[in-house]
Amino acid sequence: MPGPSHLTAQSMPHPHACTQLWAGYLVSRGWPVFQLHSADRHLCSCGDTSCKSPSEHPRSKAGVQEASADPDLTRRNWDKCPDANIGIPTGVRSGLVIFAINQGHGEASFKELQKDFPDAFAARLGVRTGTGATHLYFECRSPTPSLTDIRPGIDIKSRSKKLGFRSKELGWSIVGA
Ligand SMILES: [Zn+2]
Image: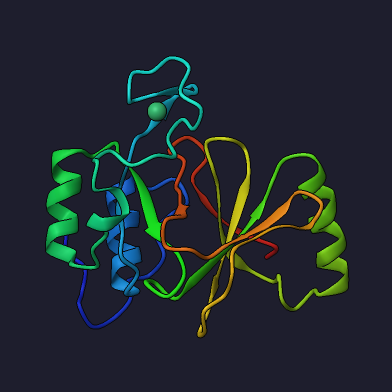
């Protein structure tokens, strides 16, 4: 596999391309990544059968502290553990804010928001998480607070300890295209 470029973003991989390819793509856009556990039919790779956040918590204790936009380090990490899901720090660290649409109320609220603000939600990079939520990615140029329930079932995640996820079985998608 050719390595990611330091200078130019790669073209977006297929939604169900392997996590290594996606990690390389995200790093090529300058977004730091780190490794999360993965889940197989909701059984988390951490081995805890009652894991409360399957595929959505860091593999290492350092977690988000290990996030790096170094393409070589990222490639080595995924060579070692190709099944790992991808975490992205949000907020100032990456310049990303995540708009989290939770199942149920969140989906209804999002439909209303799309009607009210069609341009804001056109063709966003989005991902389904292991818990069934949808996360949309927005670039943020200034510090933004994390907020819960800005509309019923919709949260803003922008603190660096919050994570972006890639769910192996559901993949990435462009939402609202
Ligand atoms: Zn787990």
